Amino acid sequence: MGTSRRRFLGLTAAAVGSAAVGMATPASAKCRASSTLYLGTYTASPGGGTGIGLASYDVASGQLTSTGVLAGVQNPSFLILSRSGRSLYAVNEQAPGGVTAIAVDSPGKLRVLNRQPNGGSAPCHLDLVANGKYLVSANYSSGDLAVHPVRADGSLGQQTDLVKHAGAAPHAHQVLQDPTGNYVLAVDLGTDSIYTYTIANGKLTLRSQAKVKAGAGPRHLAFHPNGRYAYVAGELDSTITVCRYDGSTGKITPGAAQSTIPAGSPANYPGEVIVSPDGRFVYLTNRGHNSVAVFAVEPGGAYLRRIGTPSCGGDWPRHVTLDPTGQLMFVSNQKSNNIATFQVDARTGGLTPKTSFSAPIPVCVLPG
Image (cartoon, rainbow, N blue to C red):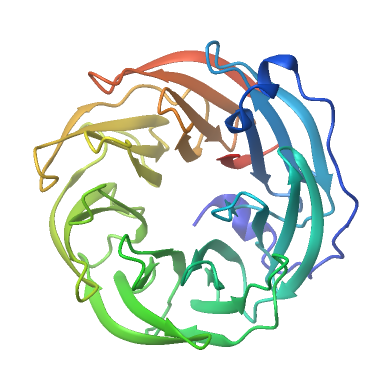
């Protein structure tokens, strides 16, 4: 669990602002909608942000420019966009937890629609499932999943389900729809498990549970584009595990694991894992070693080969993502308050530092 999360688990939810926010967009950003970035942060921590940050970036230079903030959204530590791009959703990672729906009136111009409590504590991840009909959020501290229906205007209805994971200390850390769209997967750090659910009429039904190595602390997973393999980051033992995935049943089968850091490295806690759009490389952030582990994906996706651990450009890389072109990588360095931008070599998977952008406790970057 990240250190900042411990600071605010006892905080109560605060009111959410509802004013539309946006500033003039630089000319270099106007030509491409994908040049917008939405920035997640911790607002309840000293030195944190005041809501969801907005920025633009230049694809050629990697330079980021602040364009405003949607103030009043509490602890928006993870963000997602609807498929249409007209709605943005944020967790409110606090106790009690909640989720906030936001209208995207145009790229970089946001307006809060509503906020709903989600019945748990410290939600840290969320995803839209069932063709966008439902928003499912993962509550870290209470170890459960909450379901909210999505209304026609993008706002959220009242919670329809809350499913707690069994075990001594469940900590749901990620929820995502599988590539087929038929199953919802939940990664639980506390139970060392990956759960597969179906969803109907706003209710989740458990179909299977897969166990990784005891003590691995699975945090997040990412699918290979072929949908047959998934890669699971182990936060507590600095590993990445290759899993087979059967899209017809939703069953996930953990296989070989390997270290994400060189031997002799300091204490380390992997954060985010992503796969390049072409499926040739996997990237994982190492918090502690302060690097981005780069893995080459062997043909088919069944094997990973670590080929480098370049610096993350800061301290405590919580999150990593690629821009829609796949040419730029954004790394959110939580403790050094900066977002590092890298040029991605599509041939080798290598990373070249480009720029560093100051931001208050950045923990998520979402290209718009």
